Length: 261
Ligand SMILES: Nc1ncnc2c1ncn2[C@@H]1O[C@H](COP(=O)(O)O)[C@@H](OP(=O)(O)O)[C@H]1O
Ligand SMILES: [Mg+2]
Image 1 (tube, rainbow, N blue to C red):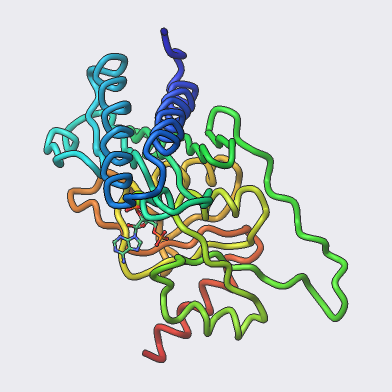
Image 2 (tube, rainbow, N blue to C red; image 1 turned 90 degrees about the horizontal axis):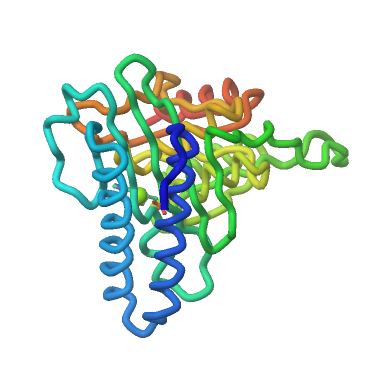
């Protein structure tokens, strides 16, 4: 089958294909041996992505969580930054739907140029070629003030300071797996923010950040600086994705916590 020509549509097509493979694999393997399912999922999705990229985007470099870091990406004009299975842990747990496939395109002139995030178990696909509308506000009619702030955090590694920030701002934490699933929850208006610190890599956020930007949301490091991709060191340890109207308040709260520690 010939994929779409445009890069955004291609990213969407590719993320959907890998997602279908992962759903099939999960059904085939079941959950009796989670470690085997995790390994097989990472490998199957990576193979789908790299074989399609080598066939249809042969001139481009690839940075994948599951591949060896190829130094050619540092001089390439275009680099696909992919996380074949984000939320590998959740993928291996029965009934969980918070795992994703990330496909992003970085180019030297533009930075993050296109991206797609498939949430196969939720039957949802977000991409820059059809950016979703800016998320609607939660019911604004809340007694005693504004709606309660909902901040998505890692299920397994929530940064210690986020609970204090939620308390200070009168919000609540929403633990979820997968960076892609959490950013998708911000895009869909299911939470208001995703705050992470303590470690992550470019592939964990490139595709969902591309979509979040296309949607008009705020995306940055937690010191407010720009998230930069295709850097020599692919570690990108922290980020904030949130509604634009909340960014100043959340960044100020993070800065106050940083001063205290
Ligand atoms: N402290 C840390 N160091 C390195 N990677 C981290 C991390 N915290 C989260 N991540 C990565 O970010 C993704 C989302 O994590 P979480 O579900 O905890 O929010 C996961 O990607 P993978 O599932 O692709 O490995 C996870 O490995
Ligand atoms: Mg990941």
